[in-house]
Image: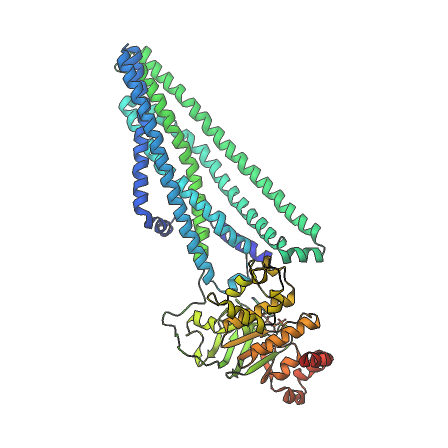
Length: 610
Ligand SMILES: Nc1ncnc2c1ncn2[C@@H]1O[C@H](COP(=O)(O)OP(=O)(O)OP(=O)(O)O)[C@@H](O)[C@H]1O
């Protein structure tokens, strides 16, 4: 499912070659705008460098004509000294030019990455659950790096090359108009084959980017801790290898094609460049020797050849830059596509930030569907008063987790409203809302950091005493203190160094630290050993005490201690009441009780009394 989605989105992005619109250019310009001064300075330096670039050829012409042919040694030495100075100055200006280029590109890249990361943080859970992790990482890393090299490479080179072309052409026409025209006439011959090859190269670049995304996605999926576990448990090593090697095979073919097309491009261009001087020698020689052209000297012909080769190099690069330019625009388009993804869960500009909030929670005719799917929740109504516990039970797929996701606005309702402390949660400040909700999910996510850092994620300014208190309440303090590094123990990737039960208790400690108004708890279905389970149950019951809480309950003890029970089936409420009331109904709850809860009754009782 994930893979199909990735392909679909990849296709969407690459099926549309970038359209050069004024809007797109304006948007790119916005990233340059804060650095106008540096851009201006950079352009001035480039222009100066290209003016300097004409001088060595001019000086060489004069060295030949006035020094060697004219036989003036003093002049020769002066001209050589001048050439030397120009050389040093050119080197220094080049240094300044490259410093400015990288300064600009690094700063623009930094701004884009920050902008993108900030935007990605605002995207809803829906975006991540249809996730294309490989693609997100590619956007953040290689696409933005590509854009950076556009600034240092493409953009600066375009300006530099245009300046070099202009200065060379002016200098050539000043030397000899007829020979200048001969040099320029070869230009159209260059453009046609290069254009043809450029188009093919552009297609291949796109194709290889697609395959790169696909390979990254596969690596991310299969080389993660859980991914590898899944591969191993389902003995899919060979299948995954086959999948990877097939992408790799295609990538190799495309890359080779891309490189070959690139070589053709260079070979064709190179031939024309090498042939250029011959034309000048031929026409220049005819003018000088046969026609005895007035004013044309050997030095002039040498200068013209030097200027011409100075002109063809940027011209060739400009052809390359044209391809790079389109490629960079494609990268910009890809990045902007992401930046344009709507932030569907937004903080209202006039969001309410109450000073006090009661922990009442109500669902009023709530309906919901993911994407364009058929409704998952079909008119849910309930009210949980402050301090009460509502247990939600129902078969798998009934919509229990969906109800949970709606409370902290990981998704927004598609109909009806959810109220917290009497406010529609969409009117409350999003940050405030989420700070008032604590969630303990079945799967605990821990960052690859120390236990302390993971705890501080819930409350960055928590004191050592607060940390210890929370861990004591979560029944994890003794365990942590017995570790050689105590609270500074590193938990490993996703907390791999801790057991399932320890991770859960750590996540409960996190919620204790957060001390939210409303608690949402998805009770673990996975069976832990009875000691661990007992410790968790104890921690949870002290967490639930006096707190408005919603529990997806799998254990009879939790259900029985709840104030209300809501029985859900296929996104609808089918029953509601206390345990005793529901047992008398002879409905879905009774059935679940008989089949799921009752068989574990003894075990439950033991745990409750433990
Ligand atoms: N992110 C999502 N995108 C699309 N559909 C989803 C998403 N999450 C859940 N669903 C669908 O919504 C329906 C309800 O799922 P939900 O997870 O809320 O059920 P549940 O009652 O919590 O089930 P379980 O007890 O198995 O966890 C299911 O049909 C599920 O496939």
